[in-house]
Amino acid sequence: MKRKHIALVLSGGGARGIAHIGVIEELLERGYKISSVAGTSMGSVVGGVYALGQMEDYKNWLLSLDRIDVFRLLDFTFSNSGLIKGNKVFKIMREFIPDHNIEDLPIPFSASAVDLKSNKEFVFRKGSVYDALRASVAIPTVIRPVFKNDMILVDGGVLNNIPINNVDRKADDLVIAVNVNANIEIEKPKISIEEEKKQLSLYQKGIHEFQKYIGKSKSKQTKEKHLNYLDIVTKTINLMTNKIAEENLKKFPPDILIETSEYACGTFEFYKAKEMVEIGRYAAKKKLNEFENL
Image (cartoon, rainbow, N blue to C red; front, top):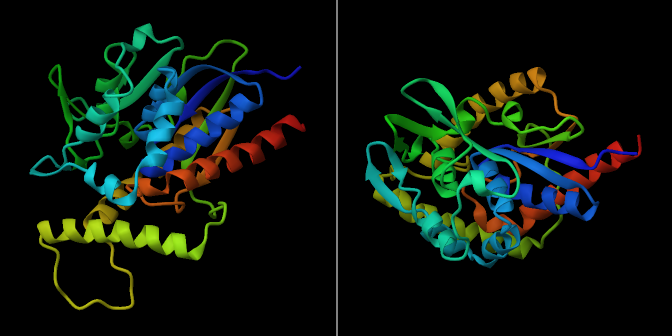
């Protein structure tokens, strides 16, 4: 008989992490029971919301956001420690998903961050869920860090973007890790060309407005695609975290590794929520079919 209890590990990846929702839905539909969750960055957000028992409400909220709404959720600032405050989105989430202490959740949950003072990973296993999530998503130079108990906490993906070693695993649990930053080709459902152009146009309009604030060069545009500030920072961080993640997967191989492409969407392209959920579901179906047919 196949094992049905899952110790679930969810990677960071910005908006690509919405794919975790599709993976979780597919696992539940197949009768798997998630007995614990560990996450980093966006993986900690989805994992934390699931542990709170509020994933459906969270998903519906994401799907209700239009493209301009997404841009407005980025509370830009000119702090020397980050371009985005990172508080606005969690303030709105608190209105429909109440906070709880991690130790009071029905299943074990952990969220990873990195302390820049000690240069070590810090794993939240108790205290406010929202405090843990806020620290775990603090992308260096982009989202302001969290100052807590003489620590300076940033995104856990800096050291451990697939935190398999942090998940609370029982003897018979299957460890399933989900990596939304895999260097693989995009496998995704089709949307109409008109809808894709509309989505991209509205998002780029918002980014263009932000570029005005940070003094983007007014040089003539060429046919080559220009990367904006956020693209350059997040792509650089992704390169580093992916290399570390590859080594961690060798040290702590999961029973099942579900992967989606790092090219599926940009870090802040949350307007693609519906598509990312389906990308996650598709990847889970493919991998679980292979596993169950063994």
